[in-house]
Length: 261
Image (cartoon, rainbow, N blue to C red; front, side):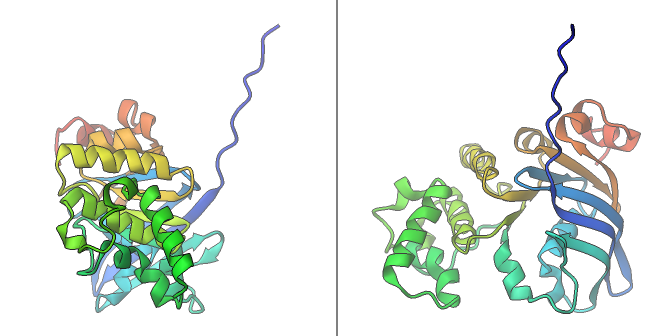
């Protein structure tokens, strides 16, 4: 008697994208993107420079809104809520969908105040609450042990890798559900990069993470699913192992094997 293999259920999509297009003025930069991003997994966006992956990433928390002439068509929903609906509070959205940029951008403040910043903006001034959140966020960002005796010193004195983890702690402090990361390790040395990758792997147990990376080995190491973009179009999207070991599209295979891009 053969034993049946129990299939693990597919994780529910946290983010659903249907027919999403994006324009900078007359320039049509994203074409009919359709994808589901599962909850509490790491989804990587890969593709050559200028393929639209960062534009798409920034569309998820509407960071592109600040660019004159930028407009979207189609839908991106988070837990079923249309992020481009007129009723959306964009400030609240960006608390729910945090962002970590390619270049670490700590504020010229103390380590403590960098992490507490978002809470203070939200009206939280209770020192006990701030202390607790700052410590928890720095621990989650794997930075607490390195800075616990330097909380009142300038964040600008930290190393590049520490500054990037501080920016991750700052994003985590406001308790987001989704973390967007735009090439978070591209400016870092290999040791700092490894720490960021280990951190991403640990954080996915609590957060839905979407990461843009030029480094295909990094995508293969940290992500559960990978999306390959080319000229503003989503060419292929699948489990990371499938994308790297058995892609269905020749264009994906050519990019991954270094034949172009």
